[in-house]
Image 1 (cartoon, one colour):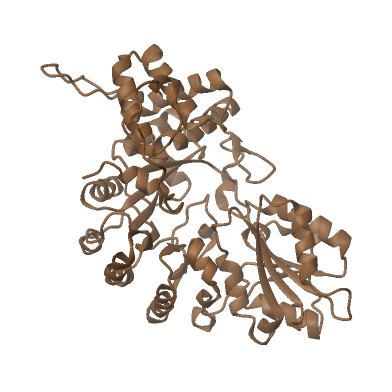
Image 2 (cartoon, rainbow, N blue to C red):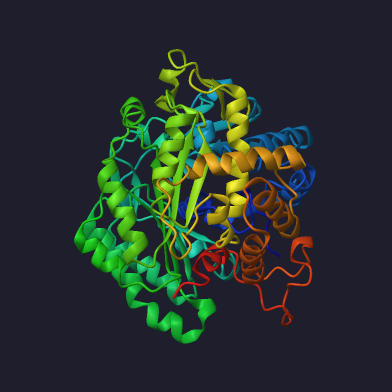
Amino acid sequence: MINPPSIVLTTLNAKYIHASLGLRYLLANMGDLKPRTALREFTIGRPAQEIVDELLLLVPGPATTPPIIGFGVYIWNVLQTTAVLRLLKAARPDIKVILGGPEVSHETNEQEITRLADHVITGWGDLSFAKLCRALLHGPRPLSKVIAGEQPALDLLVLPYAEYSAADLAHRLLYVEASRGCPFKCEFCLSALDKTAWAFDLERFLAEMDGLYRRGARNFKFVDRTFNLKIDVSVRILQFFLDRLPAADATSPADALFVHFEVVPDHLPDRLKAMIARFPPGVLQFEVGIQSFNVDVQQRISRRQDNAKAEANLRWLVEASHAHLHTDLIFGLPGETLESFAAGFDRLYDLRPHEIQLGILKRLRGTPITRHTAEYGMVYDENPPYSVRQTEAVDAATVQRFGRFARYWDMLANSGRFKQTLPLLLGQRQPASGEAAAHSEPSPFQAFLDFSDWLWQSTGKTTGLTPESLVDLLFDYLVTRSGWPAPTARSALLADYVASGARGAPRALHGQLPKREPPQPRVKPLTQRQGHHQAGLN
């Protein structure tokens, strides 16, 4: 009979597809306690009582040595984890609860969840968690509730990649890191607190990646804040994956590699470009944080970015590479007006990245962005994710309006389902034969904001809009509000709807839909959006 674990590592992930890298680091570094340690992951959608019941089934009943449960706490799960902890402590107050993670590493004494816990490890917990567990199990008992995590040299850590299970490799996104930390000081980011970036030994890291690959891993998401900081390292890592493309493609298209990197937009020398250009479509995804093109705002939040270089590099990536580009903008930064954000959005849209992810500024605990609160009238939500509610430059109604804009943009533009329709919606006409080109294009931001306002007034919804209802709403707007001829609007919507694979019957396309083949196997969710964006490309 297998003895129950005396230590459980757990967290509530946003989705099942996410696999916690942090918990696997803790498990890999438990040393002599590893045989007594279990790892269990849940999702934030699970009822708190169900999670508690499952945890209690894992650990032994009251004993001389109490069981230990360690929770990873993040901005997206702190409310749900607090609810779990309340129930857990009410049922079994003898269980020792240890918290760790970025959400409890700052302003620790101000949070309900930390009051419920027995101990909190702030900062790095890779080695400190096991050390605290030994003290709780064997003594001497720690005197402090809040314990500053030890930051060891990276070569002292056992790497966690063997802790990914076969099920993880088959069904989940695998998080990996070739480095930690960040040398930049953007004040909205917790990495602003880092002194520098620390790199893992490259040969050791690549050996671990090879082990994952040989076990069948094909989806890798690098969490490095600055993947292209050191070009020699970036090129070696890209070469590693490039060398494995033939084997991946020889198996079947579903087994092709998918690799995600976060890149610095203004640092893309020719040597790195040459390597990126060698990858076929569907393999590379780059997350490119622009955040703001407003130079005054950039300086205000200590963000170093050469906008001209960033723009040129993005243009090159779009035109000369097959990388899928996921670009980021943040609304609500101190001093940023709706007008200046719109100008930045239009500048970025003109480059045609595959996705523009629109976020609203969040006041992450511990970040230096708080120094602007008084001067720039920053008002944040008191509850996670601590989004800005208004600033001196944008009132609360404008922030809410932008939130709807962002949600609709994600549905229509980022989804890749309306590639033919989006240009019509944004007012971009191709001149007819013999017709002079328009003197000036309308602002894409303003055009979509007008549609966003209309859609909200028409439906009162930002969720629950089906593909069919979107087609009908878009048709109504394009014809009645934007003045597009009905055949033009219907033709674009028909092409998009058929390409998306949706199988309903929108009113606007009645009698237009072709006879459709039986449904094909679903695309893996990790690459589904990329597939929509690539559809129709030569």
